[in-house]
Length: 231
Image 1 (cartoon, one colour):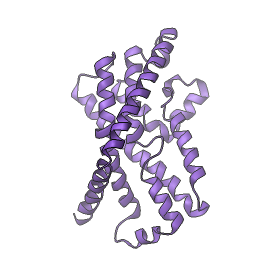
Image 2: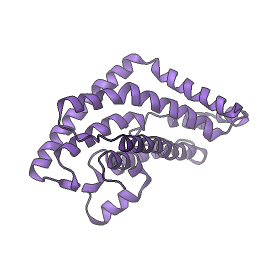
Image 3: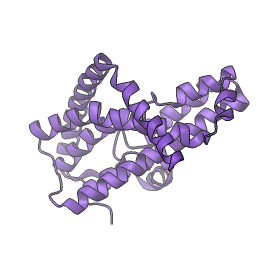
Image 4: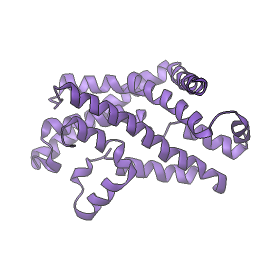
């Protein structure tokens, strides 16, 4: 119980920390909404030429876009999670202080990142998604079971996202400067999570490979659950 309270406090601290940046949050909501609009009209033009591309109809494609905008910061697909701070602490040697704490290093940073992710989902992700649902034809489930499974998939996506970024940060123990690895992970995350296009659109062996990589759990897997394409 004591350890549980400790990590809950760390998560709450992570939530409060990001909640203080209200102007940045408002700017992020605006940015995600604008990029969502650009992608929606791009997708609609593409789906006009190729109806049911990747097995999606127009409503499902639009829903996928707004899910991506809701998850971009939540899952730190383009960076911006706790890995930047952890990487810097490894580079400077301050990580030694963390290792002396009577707490598990990975669970400590996981709790902090979950607090950050929860705030980003509520503070920056919900508004663009609701905007898209109000002004565009979307395909949303009506049964509570699907929504419950979707929320479970989102929580699992948060864990996978942290796991990837934690490994990226740990590379600084050997490289001293993990900037290059961070950039590679950022590019891999954008491409292989389905942020640019649904992974169902990728043809042949390429599609099989990207769906087998862990990044597919960040956007494609929760989207498949919400859109009724996952068992």
